[in-house]
Image (cartoon, rainbow, N blue to C red; front, top):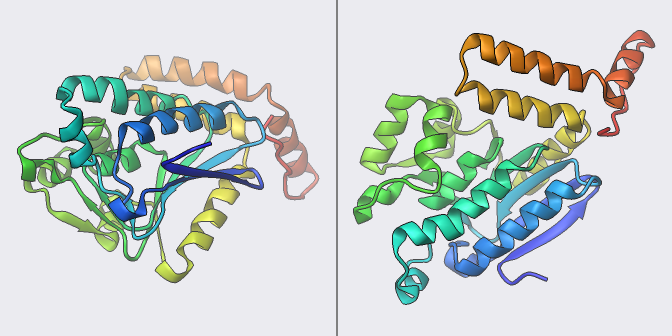
Length: 258
């Protein structure tokens, strides 16, 4: 079905692999179209309760394929609005955990894509490079939105202005990464981590994503009101009933994502 990505369902995890390893999985127009399609697919699929996004070969994503961009001769604004923004909007609509498994370099828009995911697990060989400044550009593809929310304004400004590469260890230290796994076991460990998320209450995951993301644009009274509204929804799920019953029966809960 796809030319630039691979997709497989492993249990209740939907695994998306960017698949242009010879180009460090750099973005093309075709990849943007396919990402929008697969993000919408996994978002609708009730059998998928968590998503993992990774890269084939030695890289996660090296950003825009500059050769293709020059050949297309498309204005920056049009390219962003018609390609990158559509990918980000489709990603934002997924109301289940999305984990970026950063196996190698995540540079430019590739770093922005990783930051747009809910969580980031990294290999020892992973690195991040907000390197737009080196070609006279500013961060895009949501980079100015997501990065300060992850690492704070000062650190985000430093990474954007210097374009310095961030190692896996440093990414973990500054909050850019959530877990660091040995490279030899990275594929296995990142999948186990995502499978654990898939076993948790999926509806509640989606609701907490809504609450946290909206809180950046709310006053405290607004956030509390919205939180109470969403908690009412969470309290009406089958998984809430199972969680309470399991607690009373002193057994591990078996959540179904309903």
